[in-house]
Image 1 (cartoon, rainbow, N blue to C red):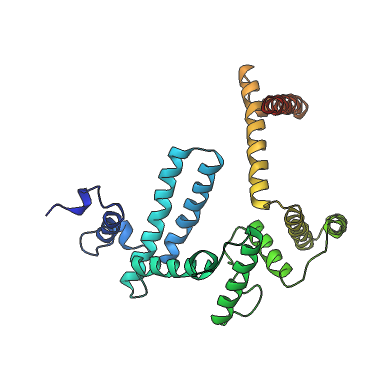
Image 2: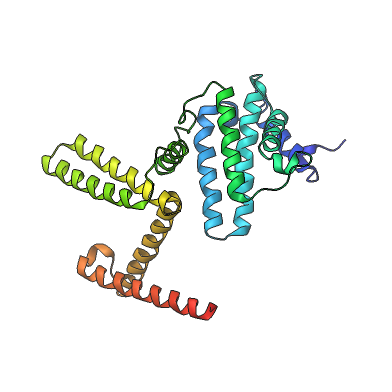
Length: 279
């Protein structure tokens, strides 16, 4: 009988067997053997971000690889769960299948019709609320994961509160709150109290996340785009200075600002040209 490790046909069974052997206490990999849920969790988060990065870059070949890395994380946790008698990959797959069927009665319940995306979102949240109550997690904010990126968690907390009516009716009060928090941050800075400064800065960031939600934007996605834009433009500064046999630390701020502005103008012109071409 051929060794399943070297048989590429059964993709998932092969991966599960690879993980089992890596974790074998007698013949496995010393590094893999000593890992646990806590030590693997940071890698799981990292791989999720790398999947998102490949999608943002439209690098589909890389996405395939990154999805494999993310799948490995699920397999890893499932194997640890199996060793501890908690669950295994099969039970994980059964649980998520059951959850998807329960949350999509418009697809799987006999005789039910498809609803609009908006109606389905409302139905989804109603079902999730019922699930939280059944787990004795009655609080509105009870199961918003603590380890989410802070910006993403802020948006989720706000969305959850908004579902029970704790929300501004429109964007106007949000903009007013931003002005208020900015003034409070300025006052804190004048006081020199670093803890107070950090608190007011956090309040301003929280309201900025709320602004994104009211604008229909995902704050994390918008900030990633801003990060990418900053990186692109700063690398253009480095490239221009390199052509002059200089490094950024050898240029003045005014010189770098001039290059930045030129790159910005060029990007806007290229964007406008692309829009005209698409029209």
